[in-house]
Image (cartoon, helix red, strand yellow):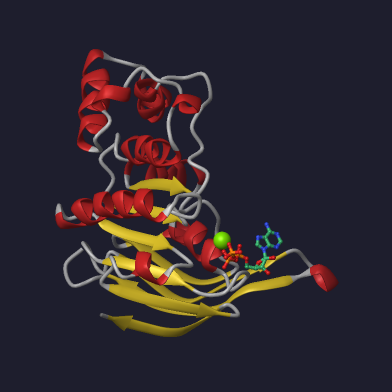
Length: 229
Ligand SMILES: Nc1ncnc2c1ncn2[C@@H]1O[C@H](COP(=O)(O)OP(=O)(O)OP(=O)(O)O)[C@@H](O)[C@H]1O
Ligand SMILES: [Mg+2]
């Protein structure tokens, strides 16, 4: 990687739909994110935050522009290579947790392993360790509907870590939580960042963004401000 940034975005645009129905969600975004940075993306509803995160997470491809991830040009990668990056390099956390119902915390955390190489004793141990690291060692066997929102989100964070990703992307991870549970979740992201992981979160709330070291503010598909604090 040398002098290159972990994430390099140059004049990225994203258009959904075609013709009269076309929506230009991103209109030429340029920015770099260094390894171990902690970035918050803010901006009004519809400004393009989730769209940008989907592109960064290789969940979707840009319409034009360049996206470099760890020195690789994402626009040149095929579906298998993109899936490989998603499962090994990136951990995803969403507002609604996206846990499987009627499935224990432990099994939810192991889910990304199951797809890759089948469950193993090591995988079980690792998942249990991750649940302990987010303060849920006493909730390993519970189903999601037996957990509070904050606990469910901590299971989701543990799941995002099972393949040891270098980047964590979180789209409004505290949006469905009260401020106390939100603070607990953010304390975990802060620790993960201090351990060297690169964190990008979307939030509508200033006090949540204050946990980051840099706030990028989007407006109408463009970067309005990009400041360290
Ligand atoms: N799959 C899609 N098809 C068509 N238009 C879309 C699609 N996804 C998003 N858009 C449009 O792109 C624009 C940006 O959407 P995006 O979801 O990125 O906004 P956002 O900043 O995340 O908003 P919010 O804060 O409400 O989550 C919006 O006008 C939205 O309607
Ligand atoms: Mg969004």
